[in-house]
Image 1 (cartoon, one colour):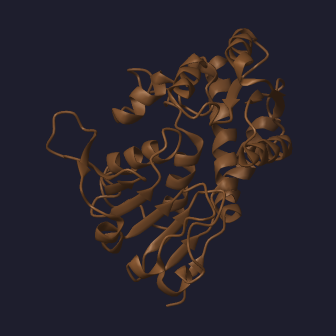
Image 2 (tube, rainbow, N blue to C red):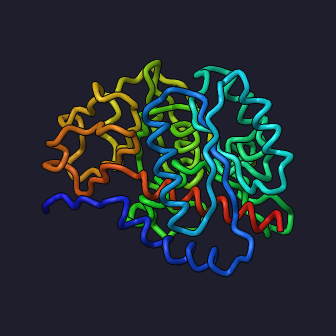
Length: 303
């Protein structure tokens, strides 16, 4: 069977009309403030894309470019500003533990990226709600959530299985373990029942959930495995390496694999289409849709 190429726009279209309709009914429009405090060209592109698509949906967006030394004060100011519905920081800022401090500084009621310690605890603990009544869902990081929505759209999730177990029996590789995308994505997939090989430059970890455990969230186990040991075992391979020099060797891929790339550059070789059953070259437009949904959700919680 020929490889089916699925574009992000196709998946994002599932949410566009719904978002525009909800925004059009609001007298006061949700307002997102984005902070750009680095020289990352891909962060700038994401900011430009965010601005364009938020405007198309009727949402307000303001980009504030600040020196990173002034970012903490700028975040505190936005936290206290009732006109600001959501806050987005374009990472990396420092590329080390100081970024985590910045993530925790963002008010959880305005954190559209879901990176604050409150939401991190919910994600890694597989607790999907903020309240005991289960009326308010926790905010999930935009790109990991976008990948989940893509996988659901192309049929990787099996909805005939019980809720929370829709990926049972699937083996998935995530090539990226950043705190912003790769690690939370691996956790989400494992919490939905998949066996996940989390691959980064240092090692490979296995994320999986023990259905017999008293705490129904995933565990992470370090291994001595190499990519050539695990990639051929995977039903789904997801890449997010932010450098054009990296390419996933097509020779390692299992025939019929689902290949998804969330990096800003193409991580798969052109020959991936000779092996994969489905290839998703990017998820950017779905990420923007998830950003819009998170902003709307926070706005509704605030009101």
